[in-house]
Image (cartoon, rainbow, N blue to C red; front, side, top):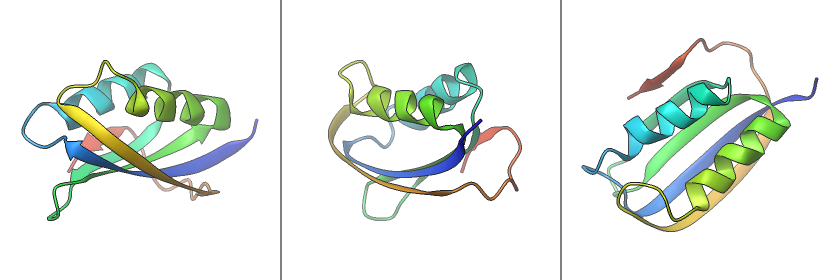
Length: 91
């Protein structure tokens, strides 16, 4: 299994609308571990580890039209999984 780490920065109206909770629910459904955190500049940072295909699906969902709030853009970075996380939390 190809286990990877996805880091995604989501911009738009994504704070104060349940976006982190929604992201956590989708990530857990996909069997991913990681976290989602509000950033001071209004973006949400999402870090997820798991099978590449599950991370790719999460990225598709983040870019989709069914998210809370309004996503204007997502920037992604892929790296090797570190394996140091358990569960998926909101920060």
